[in-house]
View (cartoon, rainbow, N blue to C red):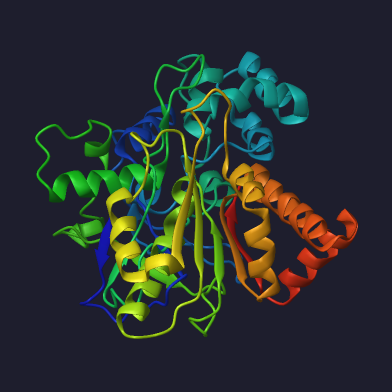
Length: 396
């Protein structure tokens, strides 16, 4: 997806992040209002005042119940055990109160009951309440107990040198089926962006879930396919000298910032700059399904020639699963040689597994290539990190 920022004062640099401020899907807003018996009053105008002099109401007031839930509270997030404990006192009856108290007090019981289902607060109340409405809960409890709706950050996948007033986003629309749950678990923001895209392109069969978003925003503030965003500046940057070699590891949507990096180096080469060796390790399940920007890489290859090489790992195409860290190991000799030339090393994607394994493999490559212990190899990687020669843009 591309976002045109030409009519704003927003500016970005290659490697920065864009923050998308979503709205909550109407399906979840309706569920929330129903379970606390406020459906009929959803559009009633209410005032919200802070009782403490130092406290601040986290949204404009006067407002409506619907607007608070739709635009300002994180109602789709997994419910917290502490908040369940707080709400136990307002249970519709003693049996439900006992269950809520147990959920609030017993960590393992809470995890087993709520974790696998990814329950948000409304889904939990509906399940525990077994059809009973939670009309005893003061609305102020939700304002105090739920987080404010937060922006979601995405690595920008375009180069500011090439696309100064257009910001590209690379994301997967999150919608996954979970055992024991009737409907998929859906990402708030990616489905919001997908709904925007379907509306803009006049999709004849838009997703019913997406149609529940109020994508025009409060009082039609975002009418005409507008989205509230801001730019967060990042230290995840190409070296200032385009002649420096770079090694990039970006499986799946982790390739996002590297599309911007390679786009930038291709333009620099076209402008006559001497560009250093540019290695990109990309991985996905199948080359025929999720090979992102496949046709673009060939165009960048034309501009960069032998300076650019893309090494792919398609994990579901062979007898054995192959990931980017395996491909990195296979190119150990060249990787070590480039590092001795002060190459910059970048990793983007999953922090829990991939990034950690890449770190380990790189330490092994250095140890074997330089004839030192693995511990020494790990120390070299640590020094690279400290010197900003090893950079990560990762999430868990």
